[in-house]
Amino acid sequence: MAIQTTVQKNNLATSYATNATHGALFTAAPPGGSSQAAANEVTATGSPAYARQPFTSGGAWSAASAGATSATVTFDVPASTTVTHAGVCSSGTQGAATVLDYKAVTPQAFSSQGTYQVTYIYTES
Image (cartoon, rainbow, N blue to C red; front, top):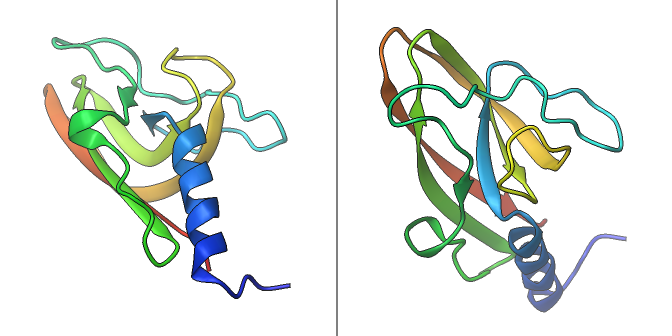
């Protein structure tokens, strides 16, 4: 059954944001399955080093509206890395099997240290 009310769509969008506490970048799609492993995550190297980014103050999820929520975060990316996917995780610990969701992004190769900004959008339809 399709969800008919905006109230319930907003409840689900809020739940998604509550569970997705950190953003992450990947060099290939994480493996599938019921327990998403964080394989292919960008390595924690560089200066400043890559790290999962929390959805807090500056990158906080927006209040759910019309069944949607969004957040924007910026990552430090080490040299010699090609970003191909962005995902959301339930933990800030890199390598933990906590990847909740991910999507392919336009690949971007970094020949030198740089930054990559992602706007995450969840829409309940």
